[in-house]
View 1 (cartoon, rainbow, N blue to C red):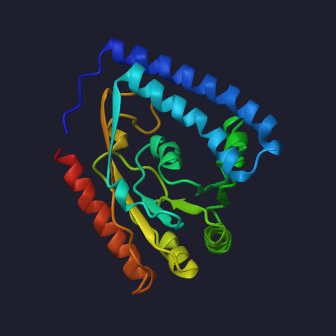
View 2: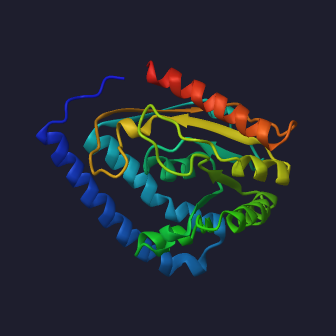
Length: 245
């Protein structure tokens, strides 16, 4: 994939986005915390996600980043699913909240301790786990994840566990597949190349196109190991195709 040369203007636009993105996030988190007691979960989620919509608008207008989504027809209607996606950036942690709704995310509990942003994140009722205690974390995912799914809320999990550079895929953890089989739900696989425009641990925002592909839901007929293998195979193949476009 061709990447544009990083010019001083791109750095300036990236810095401007970084400042506006964080300022809006702080202000919106404060307002969300104040209004949260007056809202039901779905109303609260929609309100918190207004910041995401504003951020995506800024990203397009200020940084020239277009978002191309294919496979929307594969998103089940009126059926909660376990969403599994590759992890390259911060972008997908927000954008996927808009794509599959309502939804909660499995995340490391330390994120809830971040001032302002963690407060807003907590309003979305994520499944926060302690990654230093894997056995306890898995029990939490199965217990809390099934409860959310039974309530009609999809669960997002990144099976790699941590962000990977563009073009690379980490080892897939079977936690999401175990949850899907435990709850009797399907997995919705998603592949994207957001790291090319929104690199991890960087304020740089490269102009270009983020491609996101949604695959057909996968059943848990053959058990969690077969399910995670099929999910990983689909995501790897989809990413390889995205790299060629």
